[in-house]
Structures are given as structure tokens and as C-alpha cells.
Image: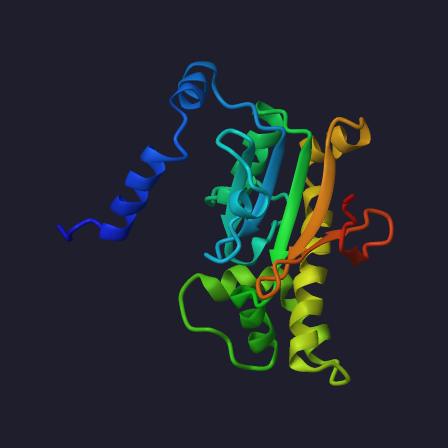
Length: 213
């Protein structure tokens, strides 16, 4: 077996000597987790929700996949990692919020646009996963008034709105939203600047939140 990555062991040592809180973790082990918020984010190593939101252990229930996509509700014999995480968060953890957070320069979204242009990424799984946004990607890629960078950002944000709509196809999500027990939110993080953009639930527009001094 290969040797365990040294930088991970070094990071763990730093964690134990600095950020680790024995009391906090013992409490989580004894009482279980009770996060109020689920974040559905991208696998991209540059956009970790726990880091962006400065969250401690037990505060966020995080599901990460390629391009932070939510499939429509569709129980069958296949494996559904994202859907099962949503079900666990909503039905068993009773989270009050679900945030779908995309980010700039997303490789998955780039792959969807490339596929629309006739250059599908190689592999057995990614191409199939990205078919969830293939129609949207085709419409955005066909708009030649937009630069490639503008198309990229546009599809990143449009895909967030689609994922929020797909969340409402889950009966246990829809019923809780209608009963004001659950709120759905969209966010977009710009890796190059660190800016967070939040989606307006009524208009669907993204804007930077204002913070008090």
C-alpha cells in the first residue's frame, strides 16, 4: 500500500494543536449532529463551504458533487448519492435551509458548455452526469453575443436556479417549503475575488449582500 500523504498528516497535527476542540467534538459524538443548514456545493477543491462560511464542526451538512447539481426526484434501482443526502438532511436532520452554491470557473459547467459545442469530456460518468444541464448549456452556448467567460458565468448561475427547481420535485422538500419549515437559497462564489453572490428568491437575480460596518 502507498504511503499516506505527508501533508495530510502535517495538517492533522496542526488541527490537533490548534483548531481542535475536544469538548465540542465530545459533545457532537454524544449528542449527534443538529445542523440547521444543508449546502449542496461543487467538488472543486477551491470552493469549500466550511471555509467560505467559516463554519465549525456540526454546523453545516454538506453534499458536494460535480457542478453542484441536484437531479429531479426519481427513485429507482440506481444509486442516488445526492438525492439520498437531501433526504437524510430534510427528513432525518430536519434542516431549516438548503443552499445550492455554485462557483466561478466551474470545470463541470465548462464541460457542459464544451459538450454543447461538440467537444464532450472523456470518461464513463461525467458526461452522463452533465446531461442534467445539457439543454441549458445548448441555449447558452448558442448565444454568440456572449463571450465564453460570460457564457460560463451565466450557465453557472442558471444551473443553480435549475437545481433549486429540481429540489421542489422532491415531495418531502416541497411540502416543507409550503409549510414554511424549509427555505431554499442560491449562492455563487467567485474564486478569483472571494466575492459571494446571493440569489434573490423572487427575481432569481444574483447580487452581493450588503454588510453593516
